[in-house]
Length: 271
Ligand code: ATR
Image 1 (tube, helix red, strand yellow):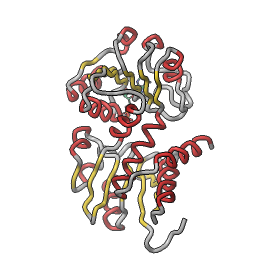
Image 2 (spheres, helix red, strand yellow; image 1 turned 90 degrees about the horizontal axis):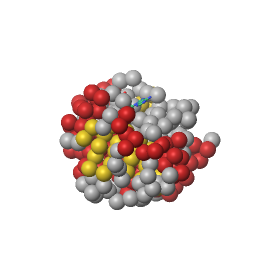
Image 3 (cartoon, helix red, strand yellow; image 1 turned 180 degrees about the vertical axis):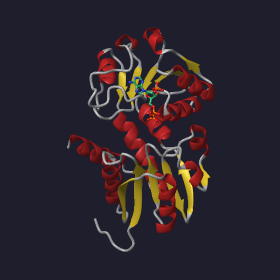
Image 4 (tube, helix red, strand yellow; image 1 turned 135 degrees about the vertical axis):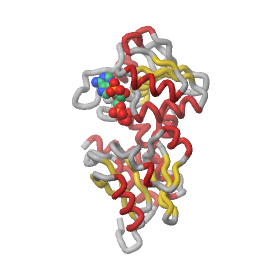
């Protein structure tokens, strides 16, 4: 890759950020499309200071990750409507000095799910009530699904249900919940705690679709149990790549090379 005086800079800000797969994925996409740009990871402590840097250095775009997805909002010039409703921005586009925030997590989840199942009219149970759950819940409702949220903390779960206008189900009632699609948005089952699952295994019935937003490991205990009981499964890698592909499109106006991005992330995960 040629780096010169015209090279555009994109970055991810977060903390921690050293485990991020974003650089491998986005740099592979820039290379594939012959775009003179690089994508770097910055472990940051202050969202406002980062935005000052973006403006003064002419950084062309940002990925925003934990813990800045909400904190960044007041520093932007504009925020896309869906991102505002979700209350989280994971993408910033610098268009001639004006900074606009978007949320592509929601789009990523939808694209990943739609590879395996239709969404309109489906009953979706979402486990967890954090930022990821909120993004997934909003977009699935918008696409005509009926959403049900379950969360360890009942208060947090009910606040999200009030905002989404959906039903809450307590975790101890999950064993006989009716669902077409079940989505895990909690970190339960993530490496190194790979023997844990956020739901009882008998929740899974043949014909359902199970999606996990965790991508390390690729096949979580949640997905393995779902597969063993005859469900379609969607792993977290798919959502991660699609949210990144949408970022790439917003930054460059070019359709992202999804296969190349997937291969780059798989390679990084296998290292
Ligand atoms: P994110 O923004 O990535 O969604 P988050 O805001 O930290 O992350 O939310 C994590 C979600 O996982 C929350 O719903 C959390 O439940 P609580 O609201 O009860 O904290 C859930 N979660 C985290 N660890 C969990 C565990 N060990 N068992 C069950 N749920 C857990």
